[in-house]
Figure 1: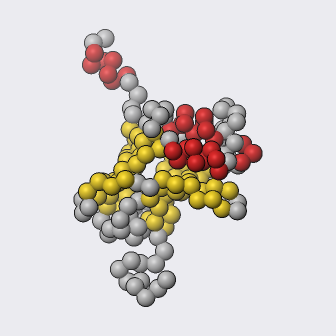
Figure 2: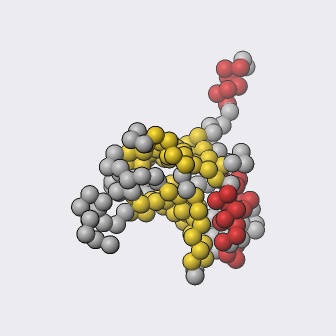
Length: 161
């Protein structure tokens, strides 16, 4: 096989998806890529932010400390035609029930933007999640980013808290 055939056999490094009104609200994180491109229609108007949802508990290894380590292993940029490229905030909110990893979607827009989320370590999302969030790497689990629906309406909700 020539170099063209070898290049075709290499696994993809990027996966893409779109969040839109009436569409799916989960982005699978157990994928063998190092970069996710998420097109978001109506950032902060239709969708407020992305939150990690998983079937794992702290007993499985998904502790607040491990979620914070995961947040540190991720980086994101938001590409928006109106304001250019911005850094995406990735943080862990500590709650009484545990931790909540959140990814910012950037400034409000009725149009769309693209969130590019990458692993800083070069590991695939699946490998990174297995390494950080479970004590038994062979354990089956679900991990996804959930698109949280925005509450209120930014254009019409001026008098509301």
